[in-house]
Length: 455
Image (cartoon, rainbow, N blue to C red; front, top):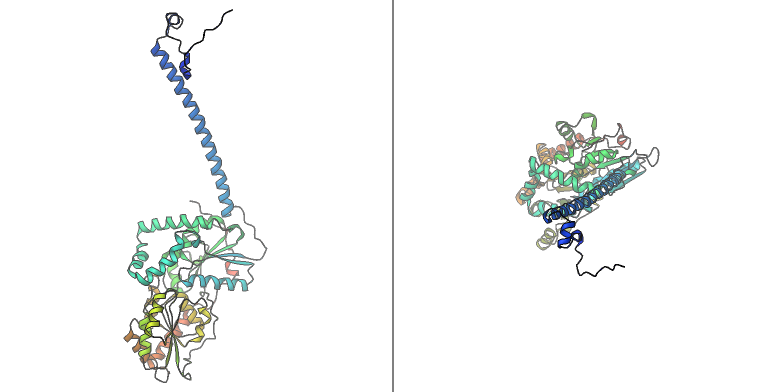
């Protein structure tokens, strides 16, 4: 019986195939040691290559499956499947807006009210801009820049027109916003209405969704060119000036509707009368939008210096510093912060001194309240300022100017002077030039198959 003798050789993996260096094994293993080592290295490399190849193949398969699942979830989120209306004959509408200034949100609320009155099944207002951590700071930064850093705001507003900045800006906005839009239940809506221009960068994605996309322009005589980005089914222009701008930007005429900008203010019967002659005092409101922008304090002092029976109120919006400064300097002036229901309070005043914000102007036209302008926000309200001053409407920017305008337009008995009558005639002419018809639910109905835009 043969018994194997114990060995003290340590196991060295693949190297155990090499026999011990003895004279007997050299005769049984005639291959040189260099070739044996090379062969072992080749086997090790081949083995590692096979294992690595199998791992890569499995990884590629896993990534392919993940992409397919992600693509399916994307189609489900964006509704690329054939859309079925929740209820036949009823429109389900999503309104996209943002609280960058109070006008966009106010317009969204007004269009929601009008469409529900027309019989819409459901109208939902969404602000997905606020769901992005970076974009959620835009309302606060907008107020900061327009009130305290107007030069920075001008650089930001007009800098976006440079090709390189416009390209980077558009790509960034679209990439971040489409992520928030995909979280909405977009399949349940027939129509998507946009009341804030930044969402127009996602028109291609909303067009791929298949719903009727409608851009409701909230600027009367100017505004950012983002309103006229291609991809929407319809563009609702509030004035003929914006209609011409849309045509110049290449929007087909059959996709443009000229309709009155909706507001939360109830429209009064048309009147051309200055109704303060029988009043004991002139109730004047000085307002600078939701951010409290403009020479509000100078206008207030000019009104107080004029030899007229006036009662002045100032709406400072979110500008707490301005409100505190006015309270310290003149405790008799009534000051207010941000007023969310301003559309219901215009009737409490006989005259409004305001910057040319589009929604504010439209509410004043609807409420039949005369107004005098202050300098507006550069860029975004420059078109409104130019159009209104072209119609000989006065603009006050300082204490002396405010005093002269009031004294030259209004007599001591609160009746209108000759210049005041021309001013009222200009307001009436501007009001009558605005569209009379509002946007209806029937005009939002889909008139063509959805446009699928793939990029």
